[in-house]
Length: 67
Image (tube, rainbow, N blue to C red):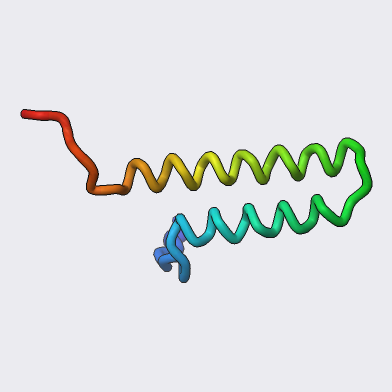
């Protein structure tokens, strides 16, 4: 017997979830002393910011290529 997929939609948009993740990572990293764990959190925060920027650019109704 196969399981049914969970078809619920996230409560927040992708942009909001990325922003929240980034803020949480920055806050957690600021509480840690210098080291590998802090470095990893800072890297995740920067990656979250980059992902949010890419998502914003891709979802913008900016100029499109001519057809």
